[in-house]
Image (spheres, chains in turn purple, cyan):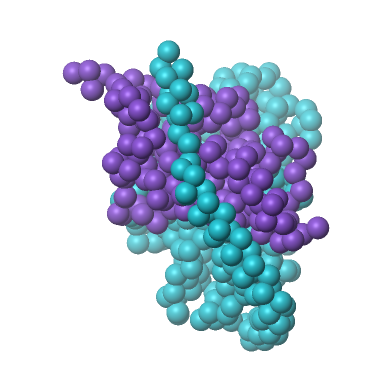
Length: 161
Length: 352
C-alpha cells in the first residue's frame, strides 16, 4: 500500500500520536508558534507522501524528528536575514513566569545546541542515538551538549545579575 | 537540576487542539489534490525525459528541476538529475535505504558537461552547507542542500561527495574546472579557489589555479592522487582537530630533501608514535608514500599554514597507506593518526 493510499483515519492516528512531540521540538527550534505549526504540517505531509516502511515505532519517531529538524533548519535558513523570533507567541505554552524564562533561555541558544539539548533532556535520547538522528558524530553531539549546558548557564547567570 | 526543569517546561508544551485540527484538514486536502495531480504526473515526466536526453545530447549543462511536490519541470536549461547515493571514503556506495538520515528535499545534481566551468558557491548555516551552482554563461543560481551526500551521474559526468568541510571530486573524463567559493555567516566570501581536475592513465591531477582570493598563493601547484584514492579538498574554515598543537613556524624551517635521495635511494623514516608527525622536508617534484597499521591521514599544508587538502589513507585491516605526487610547488605534510591512536608500525618514504 502506498502512503498516498493512507486513509484519513490513519493520518489522524499518526498526527495524534506525534503532533505534540514534533510541535514542542519545532517551537523550541523556531521560537515562533505559527512557523512551528507550519513545520509540523510539512513534517506530516512528508510522512504521507514518502513510501517509507519503518522497522518499528522508534524508527518512525526518529525519522519524524529528523525530518522536522531539517524542515526547521531550512525555514530558519530562509529567514536567516530576517529572523522572526516571537517570544510573545509562546506565552500560551507555559504557566509560571520562571518556566517562561527557562523556555526563552533555551530558545535563545544557537540552533545546533538546542536540537541536541531537546533530544537529550526532553526526548531522552542517548548521545549515539542523537548522532544518528542529526547525522553528526557522537563526539560532536557530546561537545554540543556540553556547550549547550554552558550557554544555558550563562543565560541564567545573566538574568540573575 | 536545570536539566529536569528543561524537561518539565518543554514537556509542558502541547499543540493547540484547533491547530491540530487545521493541520489534519490541510493534510487531507493536500493528499486528495495530490492524488489528482499524480495521474497527470507520468505524462509530465515522460515529456521531460525526452527534453533531458535532447539537452544532454547537445552538450549543454542541463538541470531537471524537481519541485517540492516531486513534479518535474524544466527551467532555464538547468537540471537536477539522477539519484543520490552515499559513498564511503574508499569509494564504495552505500545503499540509500541504509542511510538513517537522508536529507529531505535535496535537488540532485549532476554535471553532464565536464569541460564547463561551473561555480559552486558554498554557504554555511548551522553546520550545514548550501551550494549555489551556476555556469558562467547563464549566471543562474540553483540552490540546494548538502549533507554528506554523493552525487553520481552516468559515465562521463562529474561525481562528488560533500562532507561538511570537504569535497571529494572524482572526475570521469577529460578535464574539469570548478570554482569553489565558501561564505561565512555574514555572506562574506572567505575562501575561493579554482580547481582544474584532469584524469590521466593512473591519476586524477588536481591543479589549484591562481584565483582572485589572496589566500591562494601566486604560483599554481599540482597535486595528484592515484585513482581510487580520495582527495578531500578543503573549503571554508576547516576545523583542524590538532590545531592547538600545530606549530606553523616549523613549515618555514623545513628545507627540500637533499639531492642524495633519488628514486633508487629514497628517503625513509618511521612515524606513528605521536598524535601528529611533521614530515621534515618540503615536498615538490617528488612522490610521498606513507604506511601504517592503523588508519591515518596526510594533511597537506602551504608554507603559510593553510591546509589545502587531506588525503585519507586507504587499505584493509592492518595495512593503510597514502600515495601523493607533488609537482613544482612546495607543500608540507602532517601525518595524523585517526582518533589520536598510536603505533610503532608507521613508515614513510620520499621519492625524488
